[in-house]
Length: 208
Image 1 (cartoon, rainbow, N blue to C red):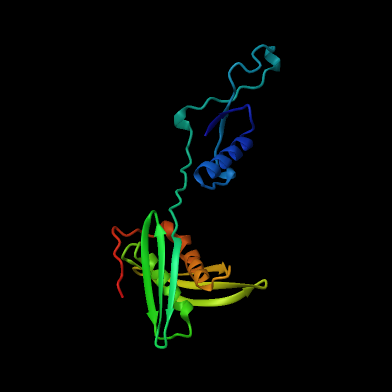
Image 2: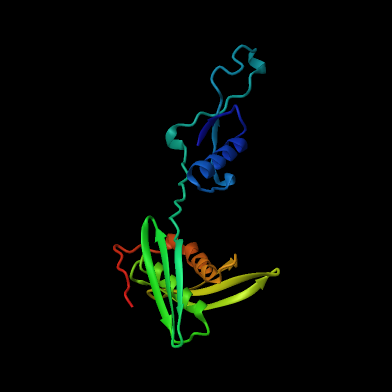
């Protein structure tokens, strides 16, 4: 950006950083913001020539390089989670929303001893419905742990896109509802790579 020399370039960059964060919710390190300064008009014009400050080079608009603003895609947000356990199987329903589009993911298993795994799978199914069909999200595991004396959930996910494979991990502290905590931990894993994942052109609800 271009500014007068009335304020040091470092302070101008910090002001820009603050404005981007407050107005657009975008965080850009002020050290990455380029500032070109020029001498304010009529500054020290009434002073003798020896006392005037040295002239700052004049830059034309084409000499100024604008830094691209990084776009932050919207993240998946939690709506609801329901868990149904019987003597024979466990079922989970997770509802998410992204850019105003809702998605409902379902999953079931005959292993009633690990219902949290089913919640993680239902969450990934809901996420997958809003992503490009070439992307697969597979649950690797759900684990309840203690972090500094506080209960937490860690979820590991395998992301497969064509021939590429990537392992993701997410964590969330338990705020009193372990089912929601599993959803939050799963979203923590996948939300970090949303910018590199293509969105689905249409959404179809899965019926199980």
